[in-house]
View (tube, rainbow, N blue to C red):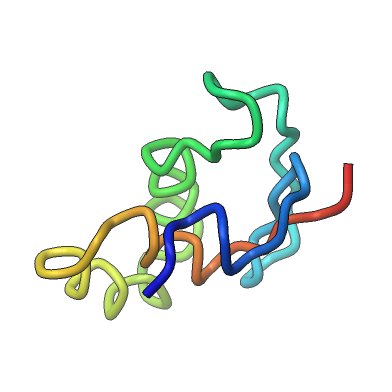
Length: 76
């Protein structure tokens, strides 16, 4: 599996695939690097039932990669 930056494109904003909410790239501490903790917070608050299988996988897989499966990068 590739790193979180690779498989989802190179846009600076990310959109939740479950509800469509967009997180602006300016919210990320590092340019163009989504903050998994912030995205996990969104999933836990708004999509806990849908996210549970992904949360289980995070026990054995790279958290960033698993989280980014539920988000997509948007152009600039």
